[in-house]
Amino acid sequence: MVTIHEAKQSDLKRILELSLMWEKEDSCYGYRANTEDDLKDRYIIAAYDDELIAYVFGKEEVQDKQTSVIDKNMHYFEIEELYVHPSYRSRGVGKQLMESLEKELKKKGLRMMVLSTATKNWKAIMHFYIDEIDMNFWSARLYKRL
Image (cartoon, rainbow, N blue to C red; front, side, top):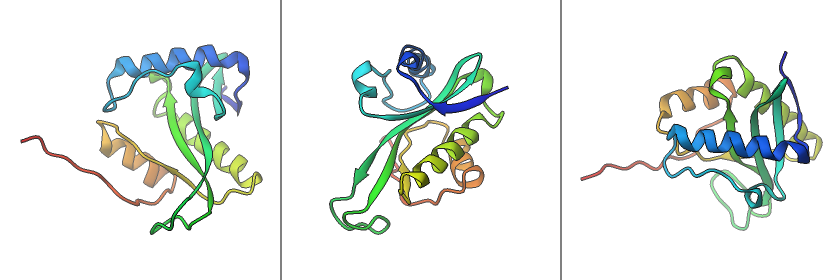
């Protein structure tokens, strides 16, 4: 049975291992495995099934200028990473993590979370975030090699 709660200091080694797995998957443009410094001052929620199998982390930000979606001086949560071990994908673990994160952010008084993605499998990720998590689309950056 998968349980979800805020990660502990003792979980950092396993998070770094999963991050290295992610890098080796080569599923995101420019992704590199995290270091301990990358995790400092981050709010991390993790999923466990005997061991840590997935995580989501980010940090609170304050918007410095008005945008089309985020008001100037608004506090929001920037999700930096969401990773689920390959053997646990498509089993609802990512959705559980995001729902737990949302619940905790509301308790902290935050009313918005945002993220960017550099995934190579954009159709699956857009389905997850828009259809499964009920996020809204804000912008996209596209490219074409010539």
